[in-house]
Image 1 (cartoon, protein in one colour):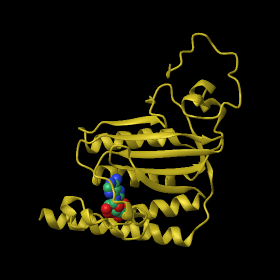
Image 2 (cartoon, protein in one colour):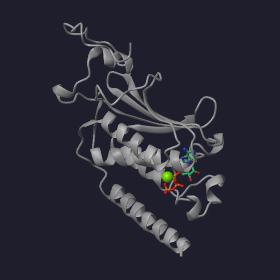
Image 3 (spheres, helix red, strand yellow):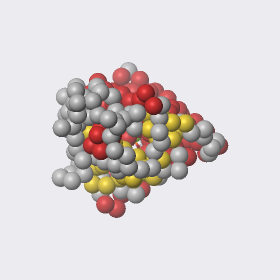
Length: 230
Ligand SMILES: Nc1ncnc2c1ncn2[C@@H]1O[C@H](COP(=O)(O)OP(=O)(O)OP(=O)(O)O)[C@@H](O)[C@H]1O
Ligand SMILES: [Mg+2]
């Protein structure tokens, strides 16, 4: 009975993903608006912790400084919020599904240039063989390790990353995977950065911690304003 339910769930998610891909193929243009990425990343970290409470999940800057929910740091990218959340969900879902339970995951975010924002989902699982790393973005591709798994063991259809790649392409961004130093996979996405509403803007000292180029000097700083990164 359990197997039938698992199979049914798997078929349901396969159909959902196929429809999602068909829609992406059909509608390559998206309205791109400023989206706060850190919100989406903190939500993803929360989801991952809920799926596997034994897992240490941290949201960090690209250099590894932990970011906290408060004070909230906003990093704006030009995008469609629901689609970008889907990308993050697919990557974080893979970190959960394709790595051993309880292994840590870091979700990193920061600027690589004034207009370029990078997200990394760094896991510490078994990683992906060099020769399979590019192929995982192809439709229905699964590595040997995943292909032997049934629905009950968390086997998927091999569509999540191709959906993520199509969405990132719609955003004129890039996506890829590298080896995590020490072992594991680091999936990364780069998107066009943008300003978001002034009340949500990040203070210059916080921006520096995220790797943003310091184009401006901090405005008259409040001495009581403590820097969360110091
Ligand atoms: N973090 C990861 N660590 C190791 N292997 C991974 C990781 N993420 C993806 N893979 C490999 O890449 C393959 C493709 O991933 P993709 O998300 O497209 O499909 P899936 O997770 O198998 O199924 P679904 O369609 O439900 O997402 C996986 O089957 C797995 O072999
Ligand atoms: Mg997947």
